[in-house]
Every structure is written in structure tokens, then in C-alpha cells.
Amino acid sequence: MQQTSIPTKLWKTMTKHWDLYLMSIPGLVFLIIFRYTPMYGVVIAFKDYNIIQGVMDSPWIGLEHFRTLFAYDEFPRIIRNTLVISLMKLVFGFPAPIILAILINEMSHVFLKRTIQTITYIPHFISWVVVGGIFIDLLSPGSGIVNSFIKALGGEPIFFMADPGKFRWILVLSEIWKETGWAAIIYLAAILGINTELYQASIMDGANRFKQIWHIMIPGMRSTIIVILLLRIGHLLDAGLEQVLIMYNPAVYDVSDIIDTYVFREAFGKMEFGLTSAAGLFKSVIGCILLVCANWFARRMGEEGVY
Image 1 (cartoon, rainbow, N blue to C red):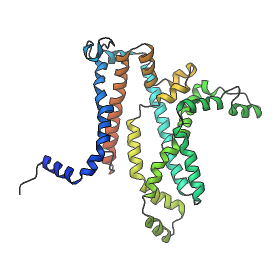
Image 2 (cartoon, rainbow, N blue to C red; image 1 turned 180 degrees about the horizontal axis):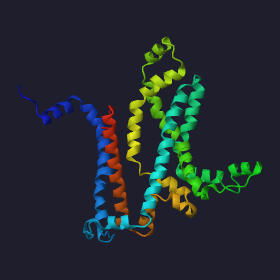
Image 3 (cartoon, one colour; image 1 turned 90 degrees about the vertical axis):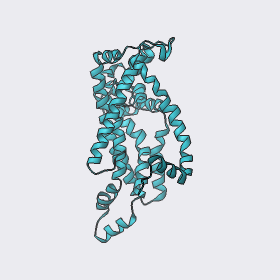
Image 4 (cartoon, helix red, strand yellow; image 1 turned 180 degrees about the vertical axis):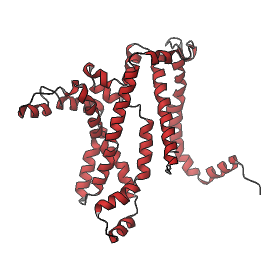
């Protein structure tokens, strides 16, 4: 029997599902224009970039920018800060939307459920400029509500935003407050996709609500949880440029200066575009490696993974 060639199979598939491929064209065009086309700019990391000469006419210097970057005295501290902040957000921020989705799903009052869901995801649409201002005002040692409460109890005001021991926790808590409600929508959708007959069968077996959550609801969300976790691991070196840039100050540079803020300062302060491109490329390569390794491990454990 003659086997059908791959191009023939592809053509038959596209002909059969032409409407789906047609709907995907705008998304593909967007990716090509705004994601793949700008990738040629990566060569700046290997050139002594000059704005007048342009990307292609600037002299080639190979790995010189990477040598300069790795020899930078502050680079180990920047990497450490990036990893610590990202891991703190992952450990404490990743379970938060899962817990919130379960709690919202367990509410029996429909109006209350919708109200709480709306209230929790609205902060996602507030920019970090506004959120940063809110937290700076709340934690202000002079007029902030938190310190006013501390002083009312007889304590001394605390400089939260200038305390290196507390600043990272402020970053974690502010992101949890801003993004948990929005992220919970995905898990609520996963919960709604669980077969209700499983709950009915568990009730017949005498399972209480907690056991239903532990043995039915959480396993039903497992594939969604793993996919989101893999994507978060791939962005482990993205500690949140806008958030940190808005909220940090010189007093906490030692614990809050990350790769993105370093790139921002060097690019727009010293116009070192080649060096910053090397830092960005380094971060992207590490993120890609982390994603591939995490996906391989997930598939080894019997899960579907991202691809």
C-alpha cells in the first residue's frame, strides 16, 4: 500500500478544516509582524551598535558584550535578586489563584460569588503605576494607614519601602493582590469542565466536601495547573520590570535590582544598547532552557506538558 506523503496529508487537513485555518490567519500575521520580524535585532548583542550606522552596518564584535556583562561586578547580585524575587512569587503567588478559584466555586450564593469574582479580578486592569502609588501611600511612615494603625497601638512607624528585609515581600504581596483574581478565571473554567457525575458518585461513597475537593476537583485541574506552572518556570527570570521600577528606591537596590531594571538603566541611561541586548538574550535563552527541561520532566512524569 502506497503511503501518503506529508505535504499531501497537510493539504487534505487544511482543505478539510479550511475555516479554522482561515480564522488563525490574523493571529499568525500578528506573530510574524510583532514577534518574529523584530528578532533580527538580536544581532545587536554581537555588534558595537551605533544608531547612525544602523543595525546591519555596525561593526561585528562577537561575544564581547557577553564578556563585559559576566565580568560586571554587580551581575551576580542582579541574577540572585531576579531568581529570589521570581521564586518567592512562584512559591507564594502560584497557589493563590488555585485556592481562590476553589473558594469561589464553593460559594452557593450566586450573587455573592459573582461579586467577589469581579472584585478580585478588577485589580488586574489597574496599571502598576497606580498600584505602586497605592502601596507607597498605604505604607508611608508619615501618613500611611498601616503606620497610623501601628502608632495607634503605641509602636514606632516602620519604613516599609526602604527596608531591604521587607521590600521583597511587598513585591510578592502586591502582585498577589493584583493578579490572583485574574489568574483564578482559568482555574474556575477548569473546575467547570469536571464531570459532575464524579461528585455524585463520591457522595454515594460517603465523601465529604473536603474529600471531593482533594480527590476530584484538584486532580481535575491538574493538567491546567501543570501547563501554567511550566509557563511560569519559562519566565523565571522575569521578575516584573514595571512593578520593581515603580516601587523600588536606592535604599533597597541591593535586594531589588533585577536584570530588567539593569537593562533599563543601561539602555536609556548610558545608551548601551548592545550590552542590554546581550543581557536580554541571555535571559531569553535561560528561560527557553528552563521551559524545555521542565516540559521534558513533566512528560517523563506522565503529564502532557506544553508540547
